[in-house]
Image (cartoon, rainbow, N blue to C red):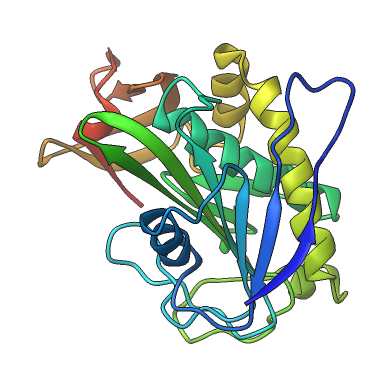
Amino acid sequence: MLIYKNIILVNINYKFVIPYKIIKINAIDSSNNEIKRLYNKKQHSNGLVIWAKNQTQGRGQGSKIWLSQPNKNLTFSIFLSGENSYFSSPLCLNLIASLSVKKVLAYFGIKNILIKWPNDILSVDKKISGILIENLFKGKKLMGSIVGVGINVNQITFPENYHAISMKIIMKNVFSLKKVLHKFLDIFSHNIILYEDFDLLIKDFNKSFYRKNELLEYKIKGNSKRGKIIGLYDYERFQILNLNGVKETPKITDIKIIY
């Protein structure tokens, strides 16, 4: 295990600084899993970043897996202590991480970036990044959150039927993984402050919502329906225009969008 670099991002406009410490590992099953192991051993700290050059068992949402060629892409996880509550709900953290990836990609020249609910970032209708948030509790108390991020950077071949794309494919350039990581950490820190304004967070997320205002199939508590997803209504509800022209606001936990 190699401690690659200690970074403290300082900006006079920030209310606080996340004391990032990056640990770069050649190969690991999952960067989220490694943070959980360190957490269980009490070897974690707020702002700990595990950067895996090769993830052998990368994970996505639910039972999905994250496929990535060694040394080609960026796969990392950040631990945020529950004692430093940077967000009003777990949903906020997911939105902030997704928008941070979008801004990073835009910084490096990627266009047509949309966020596919709940945790995929797309460019030209293909997956370029994914987010996996895991919360750690002691009883009902939130002890910390793990923000797992995967970004397709320099990989140019993907398995068939794996609708993915990378920064290199789009821009025809090779990118420094270190520079992309540092830019994400910088933007993520800034966004945590920026999006203390929850209305702005919802507004910016809804601008990027994949297939917003398109007729889609969705399920509410297992019941199939069709309608147009307008976007997030608040931190726990969607807003949907159903086929009868009536706006509904189902809970996020009750709905599954069928893409």
